[in-house]
Image (cartoon, rainbow, N blue to C red; front, side, top):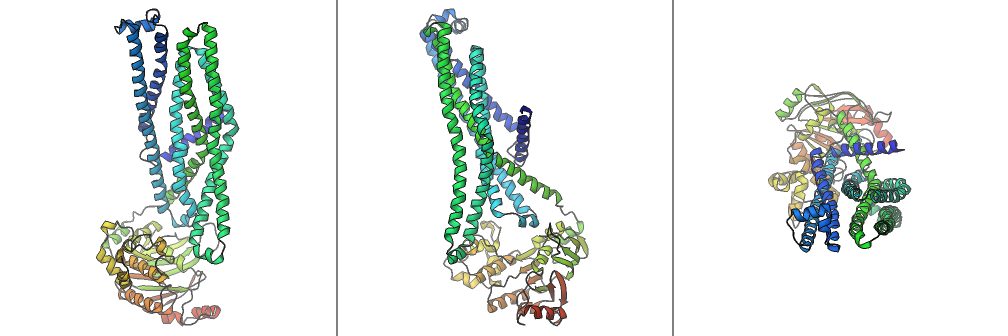
Length: 622
């Protein structure tokens, strides 16, 4: 049993060290610095208690200055001639020691708290950066509510519920040990008795609740994730919930989970509070017991008074120290789940990072330095999602010459968006080869080309910020090139509309562009794709929410770029494909036809899809 507990503590320390390794604040030198202040604080605590003995002794029995060996040595050695002055000096010394000790203790608390929250801040940033840099395949399998919970709640919980209690617990443990060591010098029997009583009292209490604390801690993490999930889904589906008149269903779900969450919090807060009452009763009984023992052992209450006062003060100091120590243990046990969750998060991301390869291809570096569009070739490319057996794309061979426009068409589920994701390096090829300017490249190489791409996804994403910030996207507000913003807005045919707004380009669009129409959102997204003057523009059904007239204007703008940049677009209207140099028809993950628009429209594959889908001839299969 003892060996098992040692292994648990060792594993927890190993996990803690691993999580803290992702911070700059953590170091053995820093911990040594904090530990030294903990020692100083505990030493002052011990000395202030021990100094009470000579003070009370001389105050109640002045003649002791000549009979007690230690007190008389100090009395004569410091040149005192009157006991009253000695009592005053000892009293002032105690006050000075207590004040200095409190200053050291306060500074220790500040340093420990700053250390813990600095670590939490850096862990949160490290985790957030890994979530943004992770592979798209991994991202697509994770829950955003779970990622939110881990980055925000679990990190904060780790700091306030685990690290701070552990550090404060160390301070109080050292204080408790020092006080008991001092009492052992005075009376070994009493010190051992007090140590055993406190240990048994808390040991028995903790043994009854430790497994429950761990279970409650894991349940808390579960309930936090569920609450976030319900709130996120409900707010995203606000209109649907309103129309369906099912608000009560979502409110009831949230009420149930929130109630369960609060119950776990109540249990965690109440548990150490209940222990405090047990400790207070034990401490009072202990001090009374020590007093009775001293009276019977010494036979004189006046002579026993100095020792009794010292033990009483020791008890007053020990009680909150032991209480804080126990609270730290219970809180750390309850919030230990946060440490485990963070460890799993970092292990998962580091495992993924180990698989990722950085691009060191000298040919690619030359391509990047050349700062111009490149020819991209896919040769027998196949893609299959992880843990599945069906190919989403199968043996795709396609050449996209530099500075040409390629349109992709096909019915829903044919693999159009997956092909786009492969071209942009979001997904790794399962088999086959991708070449850039005739050179075979890896997935890591393709990612390097993203800085030269403009991208308009099927599902638009807008910041809850100004129109300028949305078009410049990811650029500090002070560094935005406003002329370039307006030029891109004009190209996307939204400049005139923006000028009609009261605040113009400084208008806040709302969360995910809620204050704009679907067409306005798409035009801003297109303007964003143009802002960095890309060499390749990728549009995943980017004009689907636009009316025919607006779409035609944007397509004309894109057509004006033909020969200057590479454009790859998924289209849902045949009119959109008229300007394309090459049109690709996908069906069931296979490339069925490619060539000019007329060639594809006259192909047997296209006629077959039309026949099966029953789609009008003026609309591309989608």
